[in-house]
Image (cartoon, rainbow, N blue to C red; front, top):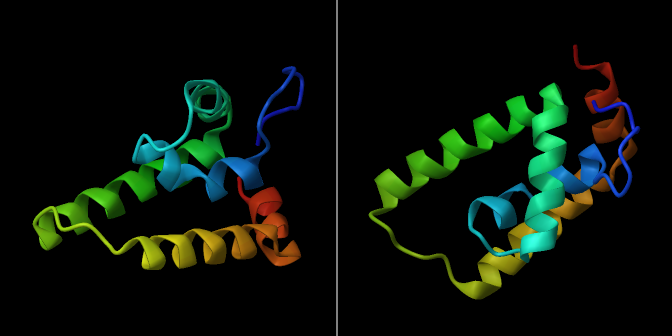
Length: 97
């Protein structure tokens, strides 16, 4: 994870919770900038981001560009945020090489 030396830096949990918003261009430009800066500086998050990109590309290929219902997307975002906030998730991030 990053060393925390950058002002206004998004932490790993926030970045990973918002990675799909980032990938889908659904967050504002200032937030995108913070997330991109964090990904540039944090290897574990960048690796996780790469995995998420691959999953998203696979789903797009398999689903033929279909869009999930808004309710489903909202439920998934909420669940991702809940998982990212769990202490065990934070410990896993800290323990990564």
